[in-house]
Image (cartoon, rainbow, N blue to C red):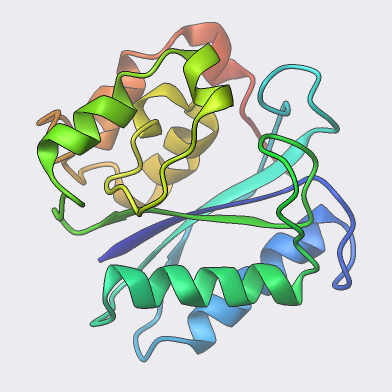
Length: 184
């Protein structure tokens, strides 16, 4: 099971951020043989604070036999179709697709994962890994990922933290969780 987070806060060739996230979900569904599970859409403040307009966020879970690298390549292709340009971290973007987890796989290894997971926010702004890290090393720090993920995979267990999405979310600051607002 691949867990994927989606976000958009800039108009794309597909339309506004809501239309962009919905189109990305459609393309992900077309890429797999099995139906995928989809969260509802949420509006969340840009991260870090004041880094741009609010995001539309969602999450999907899809059964797949693809490798992590194949999934990452697919995500980058879909981002490219949406006009994503990677020129700076944590800025406005037409579409951001993150592979959050692939089952219980840990990539590349627990020690490397711990390094990236334990970086301070300042260090995160200055450093980016040059390889895929799974599960996403900052998953536990981001309510805008955890809330949508709880819609579709609340019982998925982080293989290194040994906690479910529901348990990780329960440890988050209530104000931060409240900033992730379901769209009506």
